Image 1 (cartoon, one colour):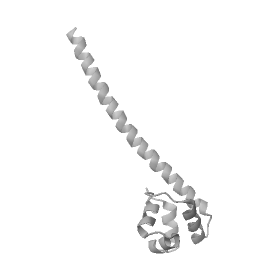
Image 2 (image 1 turned 45 degrees about the vertical axis):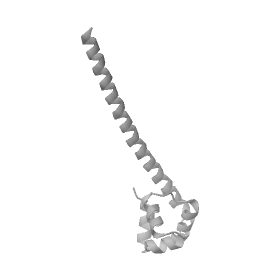
Image 3 (image 1 turned 135 degrees about the vertical axis):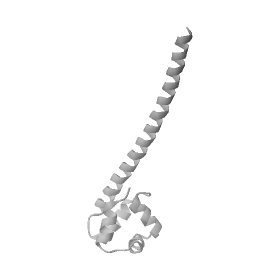
Image 4 (image 1 turned 180 degrees about the vertical axis):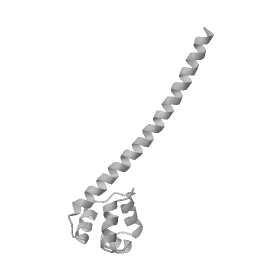
Length: 105
């Protein structure tokens, strides 16, 4: 999932990845990871982006926090679905054994 606000501002102001990375004092790779949500935007980075784009840096920070929340929720849903599937399989095995035990009696 991408930080659409960061991408939009970069493109709207015709800045390169390299330019923004240099403004933040990070590598282009690190900046790409910020845009893709692989690493979390700090308040200071958000403040610097705000200065660069002449907006309140909290917009960038809030967008990053929302992205982090969505990514975490997605991971939790995937994990819970996997666990649910495992439990369903265990239940089927237990029900199958119980059915066989009842037939033997």
